[in-house]
Amino acid sequence: MFTLRMVQLIESHAGALSDELMHRLENSGKCPDLLQKVPPLELKMRTHEIYGNLSDWILAKTESEIRERYVALGARRAKQGVPFSQFLFALNATKDCLWTYLEREGLLEFPIELLGDLDLLHSIGRFFDRAAYSGSLGYENVTREETARLAPASVAIRAKA
Image 1 (cartoon, rainbow, N blue to C red):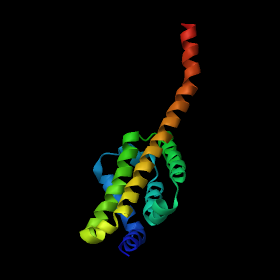
Image 2 (cartoon, rainbow, N blue to C red):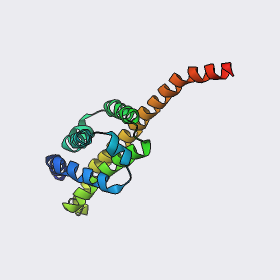
Image 3 (tube, helix red, strand yellow):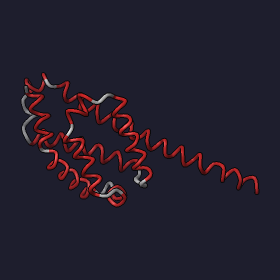
C-alpha cells in the first residue's frame, strides 16, 4: 500500500531528515536563541524521534499522549529561554522538511494514489497541529508559574511604597 510505503520511507530516512532540518534551522536566521540555548544533540534527537517514529505519532498515540509530550516540551523550551516564536518556527520547519522530502522523492506526484492516502496526510498535519497547541500550553504554564512566583514580591514592594 502506498501509505505504508510512504511512512516506512520517512522512518527509514529519519537521520537524513534530522540533518536536513538542523541545516535549515542553522541557516534560517529565525531561531538563534533556540540554537544557542538548546544543545544540538537534544534538537537532533527530538526531530529524529518524530521522523523515526512517525507511524506511532500519527497512528498509535492518543491526543492526550501527544498533549502530555508537547506540553512538557513547551515548558522545557520556555525554561531554557527559547522564545515561543522560535519554538513554533522549529516545529513548522520540521513539518515543512517532511513535505519537501516527500515532494523530492516523488511521493506527492501521483494524484490517484494520493487521493486514497489523504487520511495519512491529514493525520500528519493533525499531529503537528496538536504538538504546536500542546507546546503553547507548556509555555503558558511556565509563564503562569513565573507570574505567580513573582506576584508576592510585587505586592510586598507596593505595600512598602
